[in-house]
Image 1 (cartoon, one colour):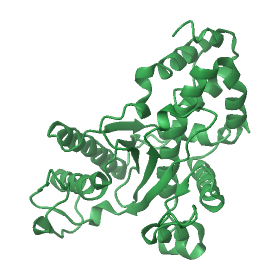
Image 2 (image 1 turned 90 degrees about the vertical axis):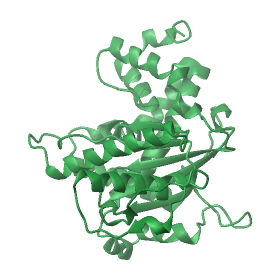
Image 3 (image 1 turned 60 degrees about the vertical axis):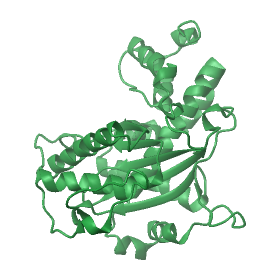
Length: 326
């Protein structure tokens, strides 16, 4: 591996940083640190998207943007041949589901009951409860979300946005942040338990929102920008994708329907995302939907760029630089 990547030794720091952003590894530090990050990212064991543990015919990727009242997720599908596709011909993911959920008011289980064959929950065990923030309630929310909404998609990969403990430049730790952090931890623990019990055999991948932003936003736009500005820029990228149909396909209703049309269950989300009336109906909260989509697509692109770097070597640098700085 070291000999195969010897071309990294002569690259400038900005070139190394561009490669780091393109493959989803840390892009700060000295040149030696950046080269080490690239070596680690290009290790075959780090190709998380290629490690599909079940026998499905397609890669099924669930991308979760964390929240409680505004949790968003999308479901991306790629053919089984995706990891082996030639790098000049990357596969375009199909968006099969895209939704925002208010976890705090979801119907949840008392007691939980999971059918290991269907991964569906018995309606006999459902009951409505008012919003509460105690750990037992959050544990039920986590179990209900995963078994009723996420696992029925039969994901090969579940991507979960990493949470921070405080906002940038803030010394205070907000109570709501602690609640989301607790819910994030419960999702991981529930998925681990379900995996150990044989109810989920896919991969769970933590996703850094900073790395996702660094991939999609040109470097000069991110400098000295506020969180609000970054959110607005990411929403513009996602809206451009949805409007112009690049980077992702919407699932067709049947083979005779042109690509770009969507099933009825997703048409409302797409319409809301693009219209002022939809923005009003959803309370103006589109950044969660945008984040879930861009996070899932960044995961796909990172692994494609890793393969390109290994296959092409230094020749891939110009392409990566144009994507990151263009």
